[in-house]
Length: 139
Image 1: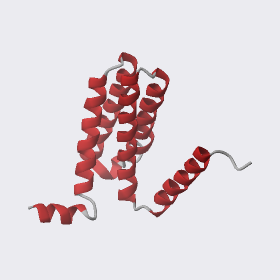
Image 2 (image 1 turned 120 degrees about the vertical axis):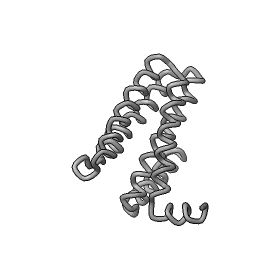
Image 3 (image 1 turned 30 degrees about the vertical axis):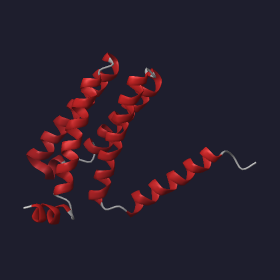
């Protein structure tokens, strides 16, 4: 009558994500995109190791979509100058590499792209509203 527990948990999780997105600053939204892509790649690695081709493909496709339709699409090349152009090229490279990882079933390529994204996420956090304080404390 009321559905399954899993369905209810998924609805609750979706509400949490939607609320987080609505309340997030532009900086936090980009962080959430990085996190989503990193999780999708990690899930792709897990499914690749388990031999689950369908879920591996879905996870890698999700990572590509987040990078292309989220991170890459959010770049303002008119204002961002050379940095935005370099990021655009890097995001395009990541998308191509993820596609290759899916076709070739390559953990190494997934590791490469995960490392690139993780480094960008760390740099993004450092320049964020709270990141400057953390950088000053670390120095």
